[in-house]
Length: 155
Image (cartoon, rainbow, N blue to C red; front, side):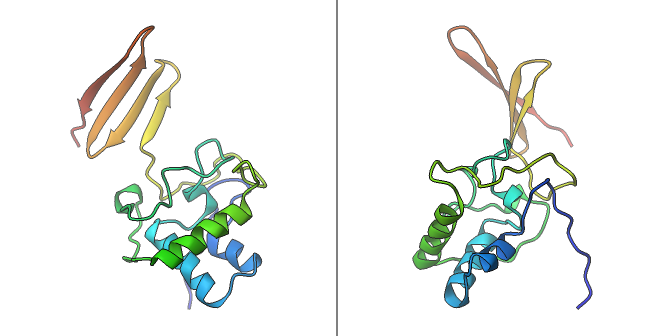
């Protein structure tokens, strides 16, 4: 079958399924990893790694979470079993170092990604922005409290 190859979004990035095969996952366990990968709307390590490129994003790849709005791709619907999720957890714990970091940090962004990031930081204004359900929430740190206000996006 002829199809375009997806470029790696970041330096040192890897395809999750290629990684699973290299880690000797086969048969039912490989299918379990793939079901959880699809459920997580993930293709590459960068789809599951925090922006720092060093650790898994704790909000990604979780059981019973719908990630369809976090990607520009259309992933098929998957409903991994409890066993699938256990294989997925073992897979990541065996890949990551004991402190939860990746064995090789991801580098700079090289190509666009299908992942839709929810959080952004503006260094020039020192404001943290959360984009959620068409609303941009802006967070600014104050000496004693944190102020939060919505910004309605009109698209």
